[in-house]
Every structure is written in C-alpha cells, then in structure tokens.
Image (cartoon, rainbow, N blue to C red; front, side, top):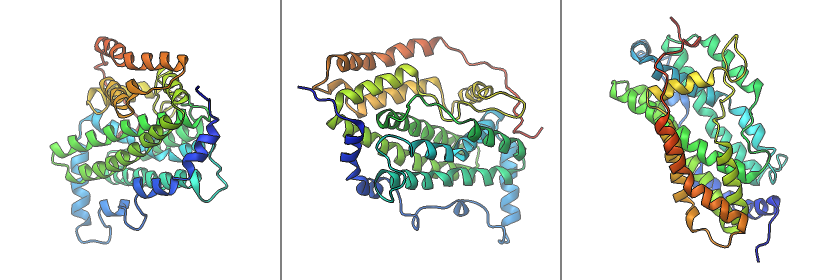
Length: 325
C-alpha cells in the first residue's frame, strides 16, 4: 500500500548524501576557473590589444544576439534572489553549516562567478549602457519572483532541473554563434559557464531521480503541477527604466527566439529529455491520481508541439535601453 511521506522526511533521508553530491557535482574553489582567468589583464602589455579585440567583436555582434547576452548576464547577476528563495525550502535549515544549506551556498558560490564574468566583459566591450543594465538588475532583485514552486523541495528541484538545462542551452548557443564569427574570447567565456550549468542541471536531475525512488507518487504530482503552470524563467519580471515589472521579458524572449539561442522548441525538447532521464513512463507503484498525472506528462510534449508549430515570433526588433546607440 502507498504511504505518503512528509517532504522534510524525504529531504532528511537525502541530506545524508549531500557530502557526496558536493564532491560529484561541484568543483573545489581552489581548482575551478575564476572570471579573471578569462578576462584581459589590465597590467599586461597586451591589455590594449585585447580590449580593442573585445570591443571590435562586440560592435559586430548582431543586435538580438547581443541583447540576449546582456539578458543572460542580468539573469546571472540576480542570483542572490535565488539563494534566499532556496534557503526557505522545506527541509533546508539555513542555520546549519552542513547538509542542504551547504549545498545551496556552494551552488550559489559557483553560479555567482557567471554574472561577475559577463558583467566585466560587457563593461569592457564599450557597447553597453551599464547604468541601464544595472537598473534592470536591481529591479529584478528588488521585484523578486514567483516560480510557482512555493516552499516545496520537489517542485523546486523540478524547476532547477529545467532551468539549469535551459541556461546551459542559452550560454552554449551564444558561445557557438560567437565562435562562428571569430570571437574566441567570448566563445570561451560562454563555454565555461555552459559547462557549469550542465553540471548543475545534472545534480538537480539526480535529486529528482532519488526522490522518485523514495516518494514516486508525490514527485510525479509535483512534476505535473509545475508543467501545468509552465516553467517560467527566473528573470520573468525583467524590466528596464520607466517600465513596470515584467514588461521587458516578452521582448527579451523574442530576441532570444529570433537569434535561435533559446526557443519554444527548446522548451519542448527539455521536457522530453526530463521524461526520458527520469523514466517517467515506467515509474511503478503510483496512486491513481499520480497515474493520471503520469499520463498527462507523457502526452504533454505532443500537445506543446502543436501549439509551438502555430506560433510565430515578431520580426520587429525592440530597442533596449541597455545598448548604446
């Protein structure tokens, strides 16, 4: 007979393995790359040459691609919001120095480098109105966000599995497009960030897989709930000066879609990958309600595909305050 488990109980069971999670999915601070490793050294004789190279390639980047790079940076810069959210999740005691709280801090510390690197790159490139970027970042942190997860660890792990995968795709694609134009420095920056995101996605997907072994029905129901709500990106309340919260997000999404960095098709593909990764179709021992949720999840990609095939992306470029005219 199925026995419903309390979330904190399941988190307590997994917390015993957090030490191994840290070793498996994160890199020691002394060994991992730092932003200064990727940026030109101001004390070097080559600094002026490197700076000119960065600025030349930045001027040549297509507008939508450049805007997507800036938006990715802003998303990464707002990371303090994400840590404060995760620290409040059921089963995480932020006063502890070990366990889940240690994971959240260590994960945040790795992620924090991404915004640092991209922010410095944008500052050096000379094409960005940094004050406007900083305004958007401050608004994004100030406005907060609602991911639809509440304080439920199951929903939060579903969300981070999806979001980290999406972020990996976005950074990797920007890097690929930069490399095609000869912009090797930016390509390397985006590549190392994307690699971090891939590791982090692997971690959160592992957490979900472990919970599916312990509490399959509740995890399936959490997965269904998140997909019915739709996964929103953490920067969905993005705005620029003079706007209300969320007014800029659609324009940013359109730019990312036009330059094929992150598309509606990617959303569907991530969904398919998660269904395969977690073998959702083959999960057994479910309650009747969870079986219906399982059926819904397996049919969802095809439903989303029909919708996506009918949607067109606006051709008109929006003028972002972030980019110098």
